[in-house]
Amino acid sequence: MENKDDIRLLNSEQLEQFFIDNNQKKYRVDQVLDWVWNKGVDNFSQMSNLSDNLRNLLNKEFVLNKPIEIKSYKSIDGTIKYSIQLFDKNFIEAVLIPSKNRITACISSQVGCSLDCKFCATSRLIRKRNLLFYEIFDQLFYLNEQSKFYFKRKISNVVFMGMGEPLLNFKNVVEAIKKMKMECGLKLSAKKITISTSGIPKVIKQIANENLNCNLAVSLHSAIQKTRQIIMPFSEKFPLEDLIESLKYWYKVTKKKILYEYIIFDGINDNIEHIKALVKICKILPCKVNFIEYNPTGEEIFRQCKVEKLQLYQRHLSSEGIVNTFRVSRGRDIKAACGQLINSNKAG
Ligand code: SAH
Image (cartoon, rainbow, N blue to C red; front, side, top):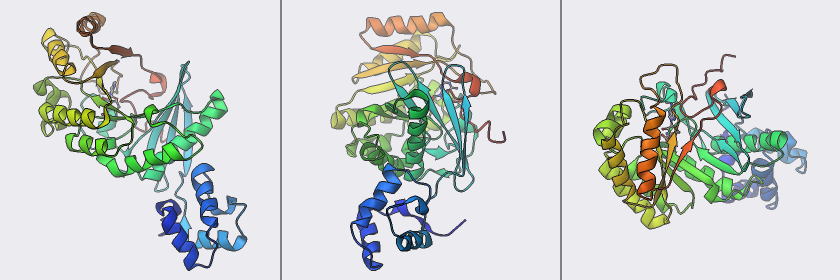
Protein backbone atom coordinates (compact mmCIF):
# COMPACT_ATOMS: atom_id res chain seq x y z
CA MET A 1 0.00 0.00 0.00
CA GLU A 2 1.24 3.45 -0.85
CA ASN A 3 2.21 5.63 2.05
CA LYS A 4 0.38 8.74 0.89
CA ASP A 5 -2.63 10.52 2.36
CA ASP A 6 -6.05 10.42 0.80
CA ILE A 7 -6.59 13.89 -0.62
CA ARG A 8 -9.99 13.96 1.12
CA LEU A 9 -8.28 14.22 4.49
CA LEU A 10 -7.40 17.81 3.57
CA ASN A 11 -10.03 20.45 4.14
CA SER A 12 -10.37 23.34 1.69
CA GLU A 13 -7.93 25.58 3.59
CA GLN A 14 -5.28 22.88 3.69
CA LEU A 15 -5.79 22.13 0.03
CA GLU A 16 -5.53 25.81 -0.78
CA GLN A 17 -2.23 26.01 1.09
CA PHE A 18 -0.96 23.00 -0.83
CA PHE A 19 -1.88 24.70 -4.09
CA ILE A 20 -0.17 27.94 -3.07
CA ASP A 21 2.98 26.06 -2.04
CA ASN A 22 3.03 24.36 -5.41
CA ASN A 23 2.42 27.46 -7.54
CA GLN A 24 -1.06 26.42 -8.56
CA LYS A 25 -4.10 28.65 -8.94
CA LYS A 26 -6.38 28.89 -5.93
CA TYR A 27 -9.61 28.41 -7.90
CA ARG A 28 -8.46 24.88 -8.66
CA VAL A 29 -9.35 23.96 -5.09
CA ASP A 30 -13.07 24.09 -5.80
CA GLN A 31 -12.63 22.04 -8.94
CA VAL A 32 -10.76 19.34 -7.05
CA LEU A 33 -13.34 19.32 -4.23
CA ASP A 34 -16.09 19.02 -6.82
CA TRP A 35 -14.38 16.00 -8.39
CA VAL A 36 -13.85 14.16 -5.14
CA TRP A 37 -17.09 14.92 -3.29
CA ASN A 38 -19.71 15.68 -5.95
CA LYS A 39 -18.53 13.50 -8.80
CA GLY A 40 -16.95 10.77 -6.69
CA VAL A 41 -14.03 10.04 -9.04
CA ASP A 42 -11.77 7.04 -8.42
CA ASN A 43 -8.53 8.60 -9.58
CA PHE A 44 -6.89 11.86 -10.51
CA SER A 45 -6.73 11.17 -14.23
CA GLN A 46 -10.54 11.51 -14.34
CA MET A 47 -10.28 15.17 -13.31
CA SER A 48 -10.59 16.29 -16.90
CA ASN A 49 -10.65 20.06 -16.39
CA LEU A 50 -7.25 20.10 -14.66
CA SER A 51 -3.96 20.40 -16.50
CA ASP A 52 -1.78 17.31 -16.99
CA ASN A 53 0.77 18.97 -14.80
CA LEU A 54 -1.66 19.37 -11.90
CA ARG A 55 -3.08 15.88 -12.27
CA ASN A 56 0.44 14.47 -12.14
CA LEU A 57 1.25 16.53 -9.08
CA LEU A 58 -1.86 15.31 -7.24
CA ASN A 59 -1.12 11.76 -8.26
CA LYS A 60 2.42 12.07 -6.93
CA GLU A 61 1.37 13.53 -3.58
CA PHE A 62 -1.98 11.91 -2.76
CA VAL A 63 -4.18 8.87 -3.20
CA LEU A 64 -7.91 8.25 -3.35
CA ASN A 65 -8.56 5.24 -1.13
CA LYS A 66 -11.59 3.92 -2.96
CA PRO A 67 -12.92 0.38 -2.50
CA ILE A 68 -11.03 -2.29 -4.45
CA GLU A 69 -14.15 -4.22 -5.39
CA ILE A 70 -17.89 -4.13 -4.73
CA LYS A 71 -20.16 -7.11 -5.27
CA SER A 72 -23.92 -7.03 -5.04
CA TYR A 73 -26.53 -9.57 -3.96
CA LYS A 74 -30.22 -9.17 -4.72
CA SER A 75 -33.04 -10.29 -2.49
CA ILE A 76 -36.41 -11.48 -3.76
CA ASP A 77 -37.95 -8.49 -1.92
CA GLY A 78 -35.88 -5.94 -3.91
CA THR A 79 -33.27 -5.29 -1.21
CA ILE A 80 -29.69 -5.22 -2.50
CA LYS A 81 -26.70 -5.99 -0.31
CA TYR A 82 -23.24 -4.71 -1.26
CA SER A 83 -20.11 -6.44 -0.13
CA ILE A 84 -17.38 -3.81 -0.23
CA GLN A 85 -13.69 -4.60 -0.20
CA LEU A 86 -11.93 -1.56 1.19
CA PHE A 87 -8.57 -0.22 0.01
CA ASP A 88 -6.77 -2.19 2.75
CA LYS A 89 -8.57 -5.43 1.80
CA ASN A 90 -10.98 -5.38 4.76
CA PHE A 91 -14.62 -6.09 4.01
CA ILE A 92 -17.79 -4.26 5.03
CA GLU A 93 -21.39 -4.46 3.89
CA ALA A 94 -24.03 -1.87 3.06
CA VAL A 95 -27.67 -2.40 2.10
CA LEU A 96 -30.06 -0.60 -0.22
CA ILE A 97 -33.69 -1.03 0.82
CA PRO A 98 -36.37 0.17 -1.62
CA SER A 99 -39.95 0.64 -0.50
CA LYS A 100 -42.96 2.48 -1.87
CA ASN A 101 -42.20 5.86 -0.37
CA ARG A 102 -38.52 5.75 0.31
CA ILE A 103 -35.15 4.32 -0.61
CA THR A 104 -33.12 3.64 2.50
CA ALA A 105 -29.37 3.15 2.62
CA CYS A 106 -28.18 1.13 5.59
CA ILE A 107 -24.49 1.80 6.07
CA SER A 108 -21.61 0.56 8.23
CA SER A 109 -19.43 2.58 10.58
CA GLN A 110 -16.75 0.04 11.56
CA VAL A 111 -14.99 -3.01 10.18
CA GLY A 112 -16.53 -5.60 12.52
CA CYS A 113 -17.86 -4.59 15.93
CA SER A 114 -16.42 -4.43 19.43
CA LEU A 115 -19.73 -4.92 21.21
CA ASP A 116 -21.14 -8.28 22.22
CA CYS A 117 -24.90 -8.26 21.59
CA LYS A 118 -25.72 -11.96 21.83
CA PHE A 119 -28.37 -11.82 19.12
CA CYS A 120 -26.26 -10.11 16.47
CA ALA A 121 -24.04 -11.91 13.97
CA THR A 122 -21.79 -8.87 13.43
CA SER A 123 -20.77 -9.03 17.10
CA ARG A 124 -18.99 -12.30 16.30
CA LEU A 125 -16.59 -10.43 14.04
CA ILE A 126 -13.54 -8.81 15.56
CA ARG A 127 -13.59 -5.04 15.35
CA LYS A 128 -10.63 -4.48 13.06
CA ARG A 129 -10.81 -0.74 12.73
CA ASN A 130 -13.03 2.31 12.48
CA LEU A 131 -14.10 3.43 9.04
CA LEU A 132 -12.72 6.76 7.92
CA PHE A 133 -15.27 9.45 7.22
CA TYR A 134 -14.69 9.19 3.48
CA GLU A 135 -15.29 5.42 3.58
CA ILE A 136 -18.64 6.02 5.27
CA PHE A 137 -19.41 8.67 2.69
CA ASP A 138 -18.32 6.41 -0.20
CA GLN A 139 -20.89 3.77 0.79
CA LEU A 140 -23.64 6.30 0.48
CA PHE A 141 -22.31 7.77 -2.75
CA TYR A 142 -22.14 4.34 -4.34
CA LEU A 143 -25.55 3.27 -3.06
CA ASN A 144 -27.03 6.48 -4.39
CA GLU A 145 -25.65 5.76 -7.86
CA GLN A 146 -27.11 2.27 -7.63
CA SER A 147 -30.44 3.63 -6.45
CA LYS A 148 -30.64 5.98 -9.42
CA PHE A 149 -29.78 3.11 -11.74
CA TYR A 150 -32.18 0.49 -10.35
CA PHE A 151 -34.99 2.53 -8.88
CA LYS A 152 -34.71 5.79 -10.82
CA ARG A 153 -34.68 7.65 -7.55
CA LYS A 154 -32.09 9.00 -5.18
CA ILE A 155 -31.66 7.70 -1.69
CA SER A 156 -34.15 9.35 0.64
CA ASN A 157 -33.06 7.98 4.03
CA VAL A 158 -29.84 6.88 5.67
CA VAL A 159 -29.58 4.62 8.71
CA PHE A 160 -26.40 3.75 10.57
CA MET A 161 -27.63 0.22 11.15
CA GLY A 162 -24.98 -1.69 9.27
CA MET A 163 -21.84 -3.12 10.81
CA GLY A 164 -20.34 -1.53 13.91
CA GLU A 165 -21.31 0.90 16.63
CA PRO A 166 -21.43 4.41 15.17
CA LEU A 167 -20.92 6.14 18.50
CA LEU A 168 -17.63 4.31 18.99
CA ASN A 169 -16.47 5.98 15.78
CA PHE A 170 -17.94 9.31 16.70
CA LYS A 171 -15.57 11.67 14.90
CA ASN A 172 -15.73 9.96 11.53
CA VAL A 173 -19.50 9.51 11.73
CA VAL A 174 -20.00 13.22 12.48
CA GLU A 175 -17.66 14.23 9.68
CA ALA A 176 -19.38 11.86 7.24
CA ILE A 177 -22.82 13.23 8.16
CA LYS A 178 -21.60 16.77 7.55
CA LYS A 179 -20.43 15.70 4.11
CA MET A 180 -23.70 13.89 3.37
CA LYS A 181 -25.66 17.00 4.16
CA MET A 182 -23.57 19.26 1.98
CA GLU A 183 -22.12 17.29 -0.84
CA CYS A 184 -22.51 14.44 -3.29
CA GLY A 185 -25.53 15.86 -5.03
CA LEU A 186 -27.70 14.24 -2.36
CA LYS A 187 -28.05 17.33 -0.24
CA LEU A 188 -29.59 14.97 2.22
CA SER A 189 -31.58 16.55 4.98
CA ALA A 190 -30.29 15.59 8.41
CA LYS A 191 -33.87 14.76 9.31
CA LYS A 192 -33.54 11.75 7.02
CA ILE A 193 -30.41 10.45 8.72
CA THR A 194 -30.68 8.13 11.73
CA ILE A 195 -27.82 7.08 13.94
CA SER A 196 -28.56 3.81 15.66
CA THR A 197 -26.66 3.12 18.86
CA SER A 198 -26.62 0.33 21.36
CA GLY A 199 -26.34 3.07 23.96
CA ILE A 200 -23.04 4.75 24.82
CA PRO A 201 -24.19 7.49 27.24
CA LYS A 202 -21.13 9.75 27.15
CA VAL A 203 -21.12 9.85 23.35
CA ILE A 204 -24.89 10.38 23.13
CA LYS A 205 -24.26 13.65 24.97
CA GLN A 206 -21.38 14.51 22.65
CA ILE A 207 -23.44 13.88 19.53
CA ALA A 208 -26.25 16.02 20.94
CA ASN A 209 -23.77 18.88 21.18
CA GLU A 210 -22.79 18.55 17.52
CA ASN A 211 -26.00 20.18 16.38
CA LEU A 212 -26.34 17.78 13.44
CA ASN A 213 -30.13 17.71 13.49
CA CYS A 214 -30.21 13.98 12.72
CA ASN A 215 -32.28 11.31 14.49
CA LEU A 216 -31.22 8.96 17.23
CA ALA A 217 -32.33 5.35 17.53
CA VAL A 218 -31.44 3.41 20.65
CA SER A 219 -31.26 -0.38 20.58
CA LEU A 220 -32.95 -0.87 23.93
CA HIS A 221 -34.28 -4.46 23.74
CA SER A 222 -34.97 -4.46 27.48
CA ALA A 223 -35.88 -1.81 30.03
CA ILE A 224 -34.66 -4.04 32.85
CA GLN A 225 -30.94 -3.80 33.50
CA LYS A 226 -30.50 -7.44 34.53
CA THR A 227 -32.11 -8.72 31.33
CA ARG A 228 -30.37 -6.18 29.12
CA GLN A 229 -27.05 -7.36 30.46
CA ILE A 230 -27.88 -10.94 29.47
CA ILE A 231 -28.61 -10.07 25.86
CA MET A 232 -26.11 -7.18 25.60
CA PRO A 233 -23.35 -7.97 28.13
CA PHE A 234 -21.36 -4.78 27.43
CA SER A 235 -24.29 -2.80 28.88
CA GLU A 236 -23.05 -3.67 32.36
CA LYS A 237 -20.64 -0.77 31.85
CA PHE A 238 -23.41 1.52 30.60
CA PRO A 239 -26.36 1.08 33.00
CA LEU A 240 -29.86 2.10 31.97
CA GLU A 241 -29.80 4.95 34.48
CA ASP A 242 -26.85 6.53 32.69
CA LEU A 243 -28.39 5.82 29.31
CA ILE A 244 -31.63 7.55 30.28
CA GLU A 245 -29.75 10.46 31.75
CA SER A 246 -27.87 10.90 28.47
CA LEU A 247 -31.13 10.69 26.51
CA LYS A 248 -32.64 13.39 28.67
CA TYR A 249 -29.67 15.53 27.71
CA TRP A 250 -30.14 14.58 24.04
CA TYR A 251 -33.76 15.68 24.17
CA LYS A 252 -33.02 18.88 26.05
CA VAL A 253 -30.44 19.94 23.47
CA THR A 254 -31.97 18.64 20.22
CA LYS A 255 -35.72 18.57 21.00
CA LYS A 256 -35.82 15.37 18.96
CA LYS A 257 -37.76 12.39 20.17
CA ILE A 258 -36.03 9.08 20.62
CA LEU A 259 -36.67 5.93 18.65
CA TYR A 260 -36.32 2.82 20.79
CA GLU A 261 -35.56 -0.37 18.87
CA TYR A 262 -36.83 -3.47 20.54
CA ILE A 263 -36.73 -7.19 19.76
CA ILE A 264 -39.04 -9.37 21.84
CA PHE A 265 -37.28 -12.64 22.50
CA ASP A 266 -39.15 -15.78 23.40
CA GLY A 267 -38.98 -16.37 27.16
CA ILE A 268 -36.46 -13.56 27.74
CA ASN A 269 -38.31 -10.26 27.68
CA ASP A 270 -41.82 -11.26 26.66
CA ASN A 271 -43.67 -11.05 29.98
CA ILE A 272 -45.72 -8.33 31.65
CA GLU A 273 -42.91 -7.25 33.95
CA HIS A 274 -40.87 -6.30 30.87
CA ILE A 275 -43.81 -4.56 29.24
CA LYS A 276 -44.38 -2.42 32.35
CA ALA A 277 -40.69 -1.55 32.53
CA LEU A 278 -40.74 -0.44 28.89
CA VAL A 279 -43.85 1.67 29.43
CA LYS A 280 -42.15 3.35 32.38
CA ILE A 281 -39.06 4.24 30.36
CA CYS A 282 -41.16 5.45 27.43
CA LYS A 283 -42.95 7.90 29.70
CA ILE A 284 -39.74 9.70 30.60
CA LEU A 285 -39.19 11.35 27.21
CA PRO A 286 -41.03 11.81 23.91
CA CYS A 287 -40.32 8.66 21.97
CA LYS A 288 -41.50 5.99 19.61
CA VAL A 289 -40.94 2.24 19.86
CA ASN A 290 -39.99 0.21 16.83
CA PHE A 291 -40.41 -3.53 17.36
CA ILE A 292 -37.97 -5.42 15.19
CA GLU A 293 -38.37 -8.95 13.97
CA TYR A 294 -35.56 -11.19 15.19
CA ASN A 295 -33.43 -12.26 12.24
CA PRO A 296 -31.66 -15.60 12.44
CA THR A 297 -27.88 -15.30 12.67
CA GLY A 298 -26.79 -18.89 12.15
CA GLU A 299 -25.96 -19.52 15.82
CA GLU A 300 -29.25 -19.04 17.61
CA ILE A 301 -29.26 -18.47 21.35
CA PHE A 302 -32.61 -16.67 21.23
CA ARG A 303 -35.84 -17.05 19.32
CA GLN A 304 -38.47 -14.61 18.08
CA CYS A 305 -41.38 -14.36 20.53
CA LYS A 306 -44.85 -15.66 19.75
CA VAL A 307 -47.07 -13.22 17.86
CA GLU A 308 -49.45 -12.92 20.85
CA LYS A 309 -46.60 -11.46 22.91
CA LEU A 310 -45.96 -8.78 20.33
CA GLN A 311 -49.67 -7.98 20.33
CA LEU A 312 -49.67 -7.81 24.12
CA TYR A 313 -46.77 -5.35 24.06
CA GLN A 314 -48.45 -3.28 21.37
CA ARG A 315 -51.79 -3.18 23.20
CA HIS A 316 -50.17 -2.01 26.43
CA LEU A 317 -48.06 0.63 24.75
CA SER A 318 -50.92 1.94 22.63
CA SER A 319 -53.27 2.12 25.63
CA GLU A 320 -50.67 4.30 27.34
CA GLY A 321 -50.47 6.53 24.26
CA ILE A 322 -47.00 5.35 23.27
CA VAL A 323 -46.52 5.31 19.51
CA ASN A 324 -45.21 1.97 18.30
CA THR A 325 -44.60 0.22 15.02
CA PHE A 326 -43.46 -3.21 13.92
CA ARG A 327 -40.69 -3.46 11.34
CA VAL A 328 -40.83 -6.41 8.99
CA SER A 329 -37.34 -7.58 8.08
CA ARG A 330 -36.01 -7.11 4.58
CA GLY A 331 -33.41 -9.06 2.64
CA ARG A 332 -33.22 -12.11 4.88
CA ASP A 333 -32.63 -14.47 1.93
CA ILE A 334 -29.33 -12.73 1.16
CA LYS A 335 -28.41 -12.18 4.83
CA ALA A 336 -28.93 -8.45 4.54
CA ALA A 337 -31.34 -7.92 7.44
CA CYS A 338 -30.51 -6.29 10.79
CA GLY A 339 -27.95 -8.32 12.69
CA GLN A 340 -27.07 -10.53 9.74
CA LEU A 341 -24.17 -8.56 8.28
CA ILE A 342 -21.15 -10.77 8.67
CA ASN A 343 -19.39 -10.61 5.26
CA SER A 344 -20.84 -14.03 4.53
CA ASN A 345 -20.36 -13.68 0.79
CA LYS A 346 -16.81 -12.41 0.84
CA ALA A 347 -15.28 -15.59 -0.51
CA GLY A 348 -17.92 -15.82 -3.22
N1 SAH B 1 -24.54 -0.89 16.83
C1 SAH B 1 -25.69 -0.17 16.45
C2 SAH B 1 -26.04 -0.27 14.97
C3 SAH B 1 -25.94 -1.61 14.28
S1 SAH B 1 -27.16 -2.80 14.64
C4 SAH B 1 -26.89 -0.56 17.30
O1 SAH B 1 -26.74 -1.48 18.10
O2 SAH B 1 -27.92 0.08 17.23
C5 SAH B 1 -28.65 -2.19 13.93
C6 SAH B 1 -29.90 -2.74 14.60
O3 SAH B 1 -30.05 -4.14 14.36
C7 SAH B 1 -29.90 -2.58 16.10
O4 SAH B 1 -31.13 -2.12 16.55
C8 SAH B 1 -29.68 -4.01 16.58
O5 SAH B 1 -30.12 -4.22 17.89
C9 SAH B 1 -30.45 -4.78 15.55
N2 SAH B 1 -30.13 -6.22 15.48
C10 SAH B 1 -28.96 -6.81 15.74
N3 SAH B 1 -29.06 -8.15 15.58
C11 SAH B 1 -30.33 -8.40 15.20
C12 SAH B 1 -31.06 -9.58 14.86
N4 SAH B 1 -30.49 -10.77 14.87
N5 SAH B 1 -32.35 -9.45 14.50
C13 SAH B 1 -32.95 -8.24 14.45
N6 SAH B 1 -32.31 -7.08 14.76
C14 SAH B 1 -31.03 -7.16 15.13
